[in-house]
Image (cartoon, rainbow, N blue to C red; front, side, top):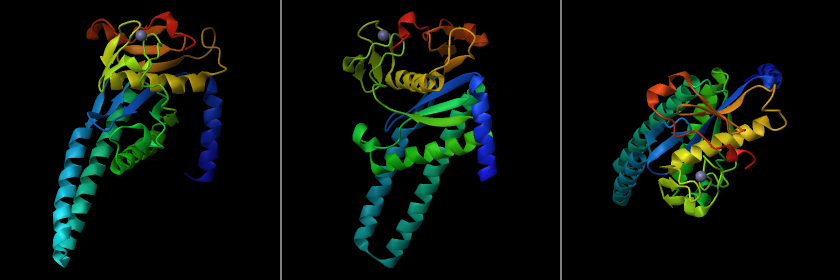
Length: 257
Ligand SMILES: [Zn+2]
């Protein structure tokens, strides 16, 4: 972005402070689905990425042992092919994330902070950090053209906090992909739960200082069948009746946590 465009962009961002904000939360994973959104979309296949990566490394390892020039060239072309495949996957995932953001009228997309992924995610490898970074960059780049902002939030407690009642405890996470709140019994996919907390974190940051209940512009998270504001008020989207009863409906105890 040229300097003048950036200035213009920043001015318009500041000017839009009074406008509504809707945040799409995205949780990234080293297995299962690559990305899970606060609207309940499960995007990409991290297991397949891992599988291909392992196969690639196995073949490369045995080729390297032969040490010939032709083996070296084969590794090179295999490497290129693998990179292309991975990039295509990440492009596809980034498009699906932005489709979700657009479909739900989101002004922002929230990711967890991407630094130190290997420290906080069990089983994360260097290529995961690379893939997450790439995915983030693709989303950020494409979002700019849609006038959607992409931000990172601290990952602290996003996997332990109940997105319905706010109760935060490590035992809430029953298994890798299952979340059961020890207080309100809310049960859902753990990554989906995390993505809603990620959305809420950015929402809190964006809307701090804004009077959210009266007179202020709406500030909300995009969820499967509607939106949730910081006061814990749930607004069902028009087509939510088609999806049956919402499980996103929060209690008012969300407030202040
Ligand atoms: Zn709960």
